[in-house]
Image 1 (cartoon, rainbow, N blue to C red):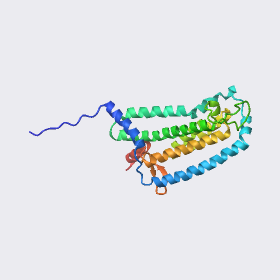
Image 2 (image 1 turned 180 degrees about the horizontal axis):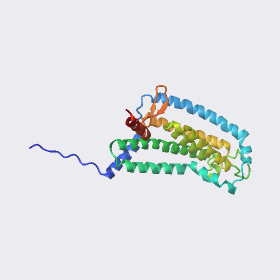
Image 3 (image 1 turned 90 degrees about the vertical axis):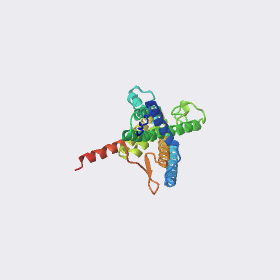
Image 4 (image 1 turned 45 degrees about the horizontal axis):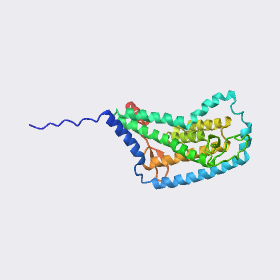
Length: 281
């Protein structure tokens, strides 16, 4: 009689969840494999140096010529009528953004563990892109915290005067954590990351980032040079994370000239292909 073999039992849900989580983390630290990563690295270095030099010059110019004037023109800190601005500014708080993105990533992992085939692949592809957004903010925020501690710039009116040159390096308290603005860092990192993945959202995302930047000025939480520095740190940080993902073929491709572009294959792209196929004659 022929021997019949039964299919191997499918791993249970806990094993699937562990496998999905392990794979999602392992892909971030695997060896870079893209053949054009050297060209992309050179382009990143050029753009980062140009942005940093331009941004630093603008920050210094604002410190010398505009910071003191601007903060004196703003409403007094704690003005009751500014409560809508105080609510709006929290949409740029890195802790809130990272908490939401982290929660979504956890939910995606739990759902993907129960799926198979194309459905799981599509969901994991979305998860990889959200990992990029999460890390763009997290890495930029970490760099910003180090800079805040090292620079130790006093927030507007700390010490009782509108003094833009009030620096106490390594002081380590919130009163001396003005440069760069953490909200501007998070908002511009988010704006760059989302725009890099979905370019059609670029105008909306950078409008959001500029609004967050302006709320920090109206609330007299930062000098103009602080928010410009934050925008610079967030943008360059997200650019560096994008290179990290592209070099590992995660969510991005690298063209021959070193330009990094988003890979097709998102959930929305898949649905569009299905719709085109269904409507084809």
